[in-house]
Image (cartoon, rainbow, N blue to C red):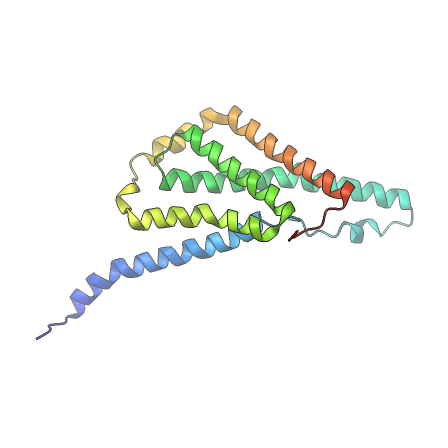
Length: 193
């Protein structure tokens, strides 16, 4: 005869519900995140709508150039830093790698996603979601792989790598700039098949 009790049911289902909730939140975050990071034309600002208010053509062009520069010299570096930070945190929380390797892998992932977004956004999206979901798989298969003890020390050591981080960010920004220029000059099509 099966004996069921509410207390046993609650104590059994509580960890399951926590796992389900955490996985759903993580999956939704990754879903939103990878679509954003893999989009070739991140800024959907219609610069012409702001610059077309002027009746002088040269002023319209100047304003367009200034707004374009603002997008890619100010806003884009901020986004790259955020994206790299997210990938770095995922790697720090779910791997046992050295901080310098974590930073290298994180910026390599972001740079690779940005480059592939100019070739094919679907490929970039696949690349952007691969690591976060692979890390989730590793976590679920071997939960002991995840340790809280090393995370504070690892996070505190990140500021000592500020020069490396700066060089990595400059690299990614330059790659994006070159891709933008090449796309503009040669009129490369998005989503090459």
